[in-house]
Figure 1 (cartoon, rainbow, N blue to C red):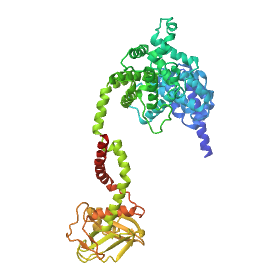
Figure 2: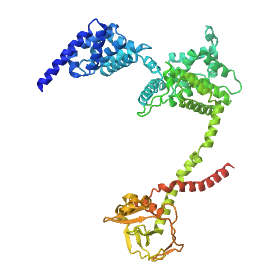
Figure 3: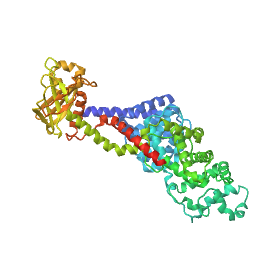
Figure 4: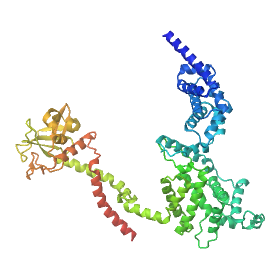
Length: 597
């Protein structure tokens, strides 16, 4: 065994030496074949050890750093390098900065061969996972935006695992906003106050009016009112509530600088109104930022099983800010469509939230598509959708009905429980099955009035006969109720076992010590065709003939819940609740009608 291992070791060492020589040869074809073979053999630990001991890793790294390898030759070089490093023999910290830059360069190229891109990404991932120092170097060379660009190449469908990773990336990206979202504005911080001054200047002073600020100092309060701030004297106080904190001010400044025409139009359009229908830009921007943070769950941890990502947030470097800019224009448009006043502020925000959530649910692939979706969700369309959904919604799902259902449910459950217990106490008549499957004799079974004993006995030749009820089973002795093929009398009778109908109608009560009481109902749905004359019991109780199948179900449900007769009653709950709710609703509607007048 030792000899065989030694021979294998020698062979691998020889193969490693030969491949290393061929890789360093000047012939391109020979080098390509050597790299292809090396990529296959590098997964073998023995070969990898020999090749690494011959400075093979350094040779491959220099080939990459030279930048002279392309296409298939580069792909095999990277494959072999990754396989060799995965054995953990060489530390990742030994890699040079030039090697890292070269690998990062392949990733940063907008159009690169897929095989090279995959291997380059795998190498960078291993660097980040295995070395803290390399993490910072890689972070300097690669940005998230550059990585996202590769996701947009190709039209292959996104699989579940990739969708989850994109969702996690989306959540973590938005969570970077949490610090600003939870930062209150300091009214005494001049740098922060200058941002508000900048918002006022862009809106009212113009770019080429250096004397404008001096002329309008006495009018600042009026300007802040036209900007829509709640605190006209010191608008910095509007940003002291978190969330959204300073994040709202960041969004407003982004709109004012990057979409200046839109910003000025919104502010001036509303500041010139005298009909109380002006849309307060400042207040709206702050509340909108808070709403968007709630919708996108800024600050919350990723859900392990979720893959609900939005493709459009990966199409722009400043996706959050652009999303805000789209939504603030939507808010201004909806305000005008609703002809809202300051008293309608909350109503407008509710409509805007619905517009945004409905548009996001359509998964627009870009911000332009989002704008298109929002154009189709104007205020009139929201009203139409609400009306349509209200008409199609089940009446029992409205809040008043849900509250009523919860209130009366305990009473209904108790009523059903008593009905089933009463049914068991009334009992039922069953036909006996003989050895030749002749159903001639009858027998009767019922629950005692104190719910502690099952009484049963044979009827005298006919359903009208007397029942002595000499036989009884204490409920406390009952172990279980079984049905179908689990019944002892179905296992014993091979002929009956083959009869599917009889099999479905069979049920048995199992009680101590290892005894059974066996039943077969005539059918599932019909009332048994027995004489109309009531059965006269020895206890002078008169009952009518009923459906044996229902007796079986009631018995099984009653005895199966710890034999305490505390039933869940799920089989009839739906029907009984519907009936009871219908009766209660008529009273409820009557009360509501009377109260309204």
